[in-house]
Image (tube, rainbow, N blue to C red; front, side, top):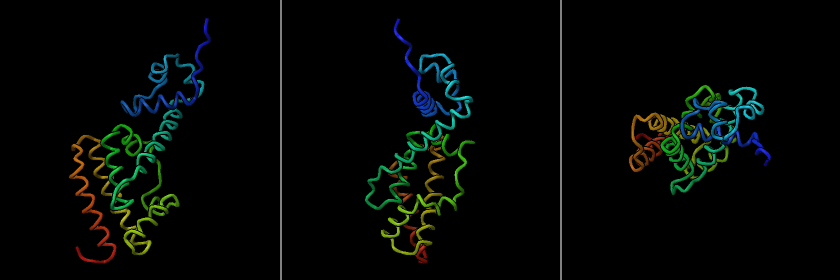
Length: 189
């Protein structure tokens, strides 16, 4: 009789992530994960004492996936617009993950102002500063405006309130970006 395949912690996390991705994080349970892995619930509960811990591990994997998605930049007008487009596109392509990451009790991230001042954002802000000029404060103001605009659009799309229209979204995001740059530079729109 062949040995039973070993169910690893990584396999369980990957499966929970895929469940969150396909149907929503609310469907992550020992039963649904074990069903996908064709095993009993015992390996799931062995590696994760609670489903809450499993969901947190799936959230961490989803967050890394999201970051990688955002950083696939190919926008000719710069880093900020590229990230903004990708943020909105992520909500359209991965609505369950978007809701899990940003509209669930698992999102306990930094406040908007803490995020704006985070060390991880420094390279993006530096690239923006080189592209548009201005002070660090001006660039941070531009970032906040674009982030709020992109998050609003993404939230509406992820919750099926509007359909994803790439051309329209690009036009709106570019207009918001130009307006934010002009406002940060003190010019009237």
